[in-house]
Each structure stands twice: as structure tokens, then as C-alpha cells.
Image (cartoon, rainbow, N blue to C red; front, side):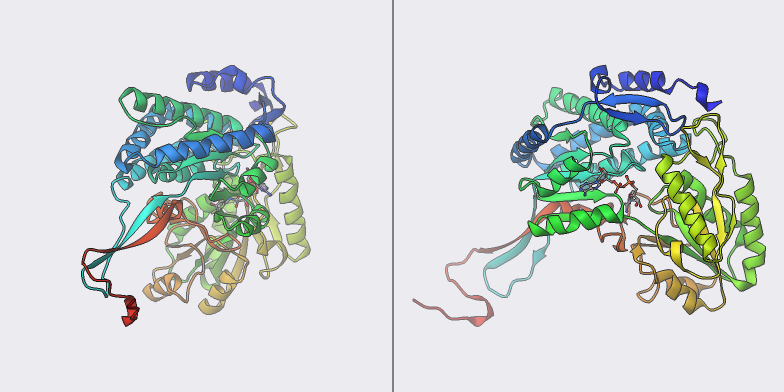
Length: 510
Ligand code: NAD
């Protein structure tokens, strides 16, 4: 049924509605495929290295001017961007679903997240606070000032093709920076649409008397080589890179080599512990959404589940039933809960992980391909794998819906296993025992950047700082004080007296 959809025509209509001219997505060499049907829906022209270098130079010029605009006025531009996103939410959300294969509510939810971060950034534009610090010298004042950094590089992954840009760009811009975005080569159409909405907001801002330079937001279309160019360019003081740990391993040392800053948002291998007192109805729903939602293609997807032996035989058969009955298919149709994998490579990786799990003694339910009438789209039944121990593929992130389930008897050993993987993004505990819950979120508990109680590990809100530890890269984006990463801190000491007392009682009379 999905094979009969004309997604290329619908994509054209959406892009036109959002203000993208046809020459931006026709006649180029970068083919974009919708995972919904496997059909090609766009052909973009890629930027050459010379074009990208020139664009970075222009973004730097934009920064030199934008940093002079007062932060609350910069916030006004982001407020207008939020308005454009509200107006374009239905169309952009649909395009996310077509280009990535997310179900309708998740495509819309991703745009809602962009709107939410715009609102957050508008408030922030009046709250870029520095401290006043007690000084040991009389008639002196010491304070902190926060200043913008420059042209900020943003490299994003396919699975959150637009929200990740907004987490970075909305904050970076109210902080006084310009941005240069290199989206995933698998999802450049949604990036074109976002850039068009940004340009609409900018036009309104200028029409209303706002001051803003050209090239405040730059979009670079292309592959890894353009990402590398951003990473190596001396006029890019910070790169926020979202993607696999392999990407971060390549990017991190290159940035460090030129003393540039990095926000690394990399792979996760997220787990949950289900304790004897857990509310099993709630646990079932939390696990099902976190493990099967987005077809297992969220960085925060639940991939490992430790279930106490006293509730294992109650919970696991119910989970198996949910895995067997979940609606898989066209994500654009109402009622579908699990859409396609992004491509054949993702399908092949899932099958190899399942084969390795079987070889390690795993009992696999599901995981097979679900036919949808086209050879080029990859729908799968999510897989639930009962594992005798945490070994082999369980220790790695496979970006597909595989949930490894393991039985435990002792809380401390479950917690130790929970933390015994290289990644450290998100985590959960399901319990009604206050001691277990508090222990899990304490310094001795989960070692992840996100630790939840009685909800799954996936589906973060923009108000909190988002990111993880260890091989997840250590970066934080979005809420809380993540804005500080996009600014440089200056400590200022001002002497308003007529003497020159030195710190620590040092004497130097000439
Ligand atoms: P990917 O690593 O293949 O690509 C991500 C981006 O990095 C793309 O734009 C790509 O062109 C670019 N890139 C790749 N190698 C590069 C290099 N050496 N230098 C510069 N740029 C380079 O990832 P993907 O398959 O698009 O996305 C899935 C992965 O992203 C998963 O591992 C997932 O966990 C992770 N992810 C993490 C977060 C997070 O916030 N922690 C969020 C979303 C996705």
C-alpha cells in the first residue's frame, strides 16, 4: 500500500509551502530517499569545499556584527522564528515523517520541541547572567561577563533532523553567535525547510526595524567532508556535533588539536532496572515506548532491561505480547506505532546484532522484516532478546529496535551491570522503593547524563540539559545552563579607588 504513495510530489508541495524554491532540491547529485517507500524525493546540489570555506568566512563576518545587537533584541528574532515554526508545524512535521520515517505524532513532536526551545531562548535572552564576586581588595569590584564566541558549527544526525539544529541555533543566536549547519546527508530536505523558515523570520525582524546581518544562519549541504571542514576551520570556535561515537572519536581530537570547543552528543546504550515493587502496568508502557518508539532510532532508546527475578515472569510475557502486536507500517497512517528503519544498512546491522546475540545464547522474539510491498523500504518487527548475561552486542549501540532483557537478583549487581558499558546517555529505574529510587539518582547510582524514576529513558524535555557521559561525549545542550557553552566567560576586576592594592598582599612599590 505504501508503494503507491507519491511522496516526491508531496515533498515538493510541502517544500513550496514552506518557501523553498525548486532549484534547491532538483537537478543535484545528492539523492534523498524516503524510508517510508524507498522512493527518491529530492536531488540536492552539494556545496564545494571552496563554497563552504567562503560561507564560513561570511558567517564569521555576520558574527562580528550580530554580537553588537543587545541580547533581548536578538531574542526577538528567535521569538519570530518560533512563530514561523508554529505556522509551519503541520507541514514541517509531515516532512520529518516523510524524510525520516517517524510516525505522525513524533514528526509533529519534533517541531514542537523546536518551538519550545525558541520560547526558552527568548526568555534566556534577558537572563544571560554573570556573577558579582566578593573581592579581597578595597574599592574594587569583581564580576563575570559572558560574551559570544563566533560562528558556531552544528553537525547533526539523521534521526532528529531539525530539533538538534534548534537546540543549538536558538541558544547560540541569542548568545550573539552566528551558526553554520551541516545536516545529515540522509535528511537535508528538512534542513532546507528550516532554513527557509529562519529566513522568513529574519525578513520580518528586519521589516519591523530589527538589526541583523546577512548570513546569520548558514546551511551547508554535503557529506562528512564538509563536516570535517567545519571541524578544522580556524574561524569556527565551537562545533556541536551530534551522531555516532565513531564520528565523535574522529571529531573530538581534531577540535582539541586546535583548542576549539566541542559539544559532543554521541551514541547511547540506555538501560532500565525494573525492581520488585515496580508498578508493572506503568513499566510496560514506559518500556514499550522507550524501546520500540521511533523504531529504536533515538539516541535515548531503551536497549537494555534488567528485571528482578520476582517480577520477571509477570513482565516479560506481557512485553512479548506487546512486541508481537504493535502496529508496524506506514508512519503517515493513523494508528501506526512503529515506522521503518532509515535504510538497508540499518536493517543489515540489526540482523547481524541479532545473529551475534543468538550465538551468545540469546532467545530472540521478533526482529524479522515486515513486508510493505516495496523492496526498498525496511520495516521490522521490534526484537526482544532474553540474554543470559550482558555480553557481545549488548555492550554496543545498534541503532534499531532491539531490547536485551536480563534477569537479576541483587540490586547492587544490577546497578553495576547498568553502568558497565562504555556509553552513558540515559537511564531509568522502575520502583516504588524510595531507597532504590534515591540510590539510582545519587552519586553512587546511574553514571548517565539522564537518570529517570518511573518513566523510560527516552523522550527528554527541552528544559533540562541534554547529553551524556563516557563515550556519549560529555556535551550538554538545550535547557538549564547549557547556554554557557556558546559563550566565553571574562572575569573583570575594576579598581574605583586611587591606590593599587595587589592581591594576596604582594608589595611592588616602584
Ligand atoms: P553519523 O555519525 O553517521 O553522522 C552524524 C553526522 O556527522 C552527519 O551529519 C555526518 O555527515 C557527520 N559526520 C560523520 N563523520 C564525520 C567526521 N569524521 N567529521 C565530521 N562530520 C562527520 O550518525 P547518524 O547515523 O546520522 O545518527 C545516528 C547516531 O547519532 C547514533 O549513534 C545516535 O545515538 C547518535 N545520536 C546522538 C544524539 C545525542 O544527543 N547524544 C542525538 C541523536 C543521534
